[in-house]
Image (cartoon, rainbow, N blue to C red; front, side):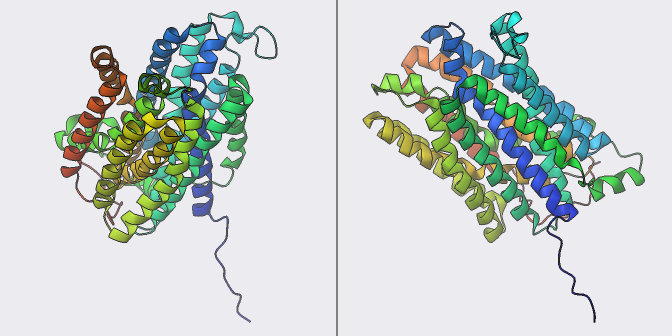
Length: 424
């Protein structure tokens, strides 16, 4: 009798999807955790309310700058040495950094040696190191999976990675509020290190391997992006499309205590609770935006629908949120759902560039979007001093969404592109 061949559950492709998804879970957990615990941790380290706000933004910006540095470095490494080296190297770095972060200012325990150094300096160094590490995982994972799946199936696979990863933010919100900031950082570090055990069996992208055997004169990594105005503008446009997402996170969620206080909400919504609510919506938003892009056979139209929904969600937070913390939280769920176009934006970057720069672009894109929070928060803080926190949120948000909509018009539709090509 002929044997019946069934697809293996843990085929190389499925294993790569699983590792990328779980890696992104830990990545998002660690990335969002600081937004959840920064107020508690800075208070525990002796800072008053005003210092917590200013120092919190400073530390967030340092982490984001680390992500910018890591986005460039890991992306180039991915195109020069392979996707796997980035996937696991980045996990090691951010896991160790977050584990050590649990010891900032500690006077006793196994991490007390970290507490021997100046708390704020140590906090900043570890946030920078964590940012560098966090910069690599998503881009490497998405690039690897995109190059291992079919042109029409990769959207579903990447959507799955995004949905699993977003759950990490919900877990970060819950753990950060319930377990305390030191324990929450330790959990993130341990989860990341445990994930490395899944490295066994994951194989390198066939397209990358073929590139190494082909034309050795093809430039890789950052050089083509720096020498081609067309490629640079293509990347810049995609980054601006995603910028409104990090306005919602860095300002409306991250600075919620300040905005809610200006609205007269007492007690103000807790950052950890808002993060959990935001990403509870984003879990379904990631799935919905990814599947909508598959159904429409268009990444651009799906992004347009969800960007408009995100703007509506922001308006609901500012209009209904003044009624109380419960209303602020409910509107945050809506805003989080529509912000789920994040994963389609990353898909767009992956599908829009050739194999010789794909890892660089896919790794840089989410990190450049995240780093956009630096100028956004700077503009917000300047406006808040002049117009007040609520008006500043309206004006900053309007600018971000206008820029994002204009940038989307300049992005070419990448759905169904054959990824077996290089950039010259």
